Image (tube, rainbow, N blue to C red; front, side, top):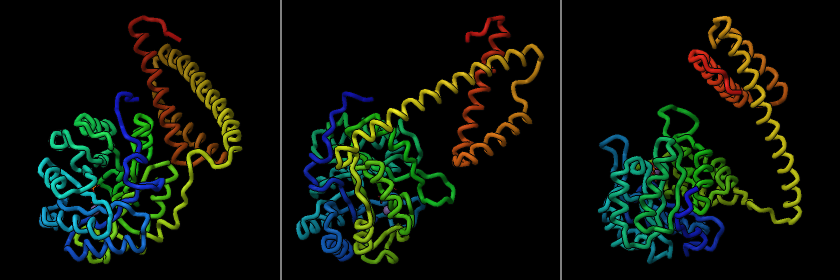
Length: 372
Ligand code: PEP
Ligand code: MN
């Protein structure tokens, strides 16, 4: 855990009176009319949204696509704030973006996924933020590297930013899976474990890449106790100049928001505490049994390694591994366990077995006895 990070809890950012921070608006600011129309439709149909987003400078994967309207779009956002009262947010990718956004009174800045991967750029942004009190959200890097994500958060924090949050927008795999950028929830959970006071917002739009998955991913984010959602919206998504497949109209956004079930980390009923602690005791003792069993398996593996060495046998006998895996997967299936999970579990157990055996073999080479 990083203890010396001073972070302001999101409910004290002064941005929303709701339990979750909801940010919405178009992927890109295109025209003054499109920006204002989106904002007004959001206020009318999805009043839960308190922060308006719009990309002004767009990091496009390939050149010759629309790369953002640039500085003039910032005054359209000022207009939005004036006319609707919505707070405004933009992506900043360098020091100049920070200066311009602040000059135009933008309320929240976010660092995009393609910027988080580059410590030079993040430091450049952090230097520009020194002495400024503005909320900053740091998107995860495009590759699932927690250290890189943490490093960017630390750089911004060291510049004095305490209203600081993270955005989980999924990770690029280069493959055509179900998601445009597959979520890696365990990484976001680990970030929360390391920095419990750091709010984490989910960006289902860039995770999904298409509208029909938005509800599912948003619900999952809420069930994982994330602190808010950033969802792209556009008055006419099919005509959007960027990310058209993933944007929704403000009306469709409001339908998604109404379908979401908001649950609390601590239940409303005082009895839940007793029930939970009973089940948690049970889980604690099952976990001890699991660890004890794995450790006992390791001891047997050491004996096998000793025997193989004495009989000059290789560590891996591929037929045995193949049979063992098939057998265990069949048992696991009968027990109702998920195939993918069982396979990954056994691959890990097998790797541990190989590691133990390699250690035994090497120790024997040096004529040392095995340490049980
Ligand atoms: C965006 O929010 O429009 C954007 C470009 O996102 P990301 O940095 O997650 O790709
Ligand atoms: Mn986008």
